Image (cartoon, rainbow over the protein chains, first blue to last red):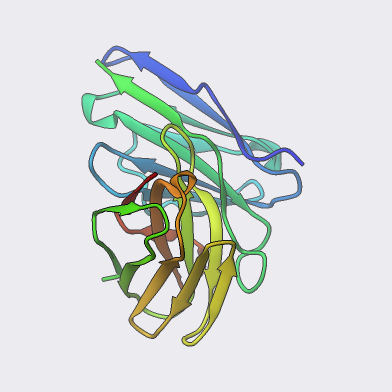
Amino acid sequence: EAGVTQFPSHSVIEKGQTVTLRCDPISGHDNLYWYRRVMGKEIKFLLHFVKESKQDESGMPNNRFLAERTGGTYSTLKVQPAELEDSGVYFCASSARLAGSYNEQFFGPGTRLTVL
Amino acid sequence: EDQVTQSPEALRLQEGESSSLNCSYTVSGLRGLFWYRQDPGKGPEFLFTLYSAGEEKEKERLKATLTKKESFLHITAPKPEDSATYLCAVCHGGATNKLIFGTGTLLAVQP
């Protein structure tokens, strides 16, 4: 069974440009999460989808970040316009359930974003 | 405020030298404590979930335990391939399932 996949693996953009990151969760997982790790810090939660609905977006830094999950399958995270402090590694994770057994979150390899 | 603290930040062991990593947490309504392994350039790889104090889980040379305030990841007779960053995360009660991570312990096992 394929794991969580993310595209691209790396992205280098200029300040002010737009970047779109994509995540394909494990097939059948309704829950999809975005996390971010900036240099020297811990991984931090950004957003949680249940199917196509945003369950929790309390971790989104500001309105330059837009996440979508049309059709409840893959998700995109757009940063527009990008700023220097947006640099970091963006992880996507998915899980089958919200609580109890099988709520483990499985992570993708991440997208390393560098804003120059 | 929910918080996770891991110690030590880094640990260097000789092959076969057993040790433990610590994860202290404060969270309202623990829904689970998770251990992940992360290799350079890769995403976190799931290891264990612990749900209640007293619970223990094992996988090969790793054993995770949980109390009401902390979790330990015991590594018995480690091998060089166990070298990685080990991350601890908690999930608290509520409508979401978001994980709160510690900064990790970087483990290096020398042959």
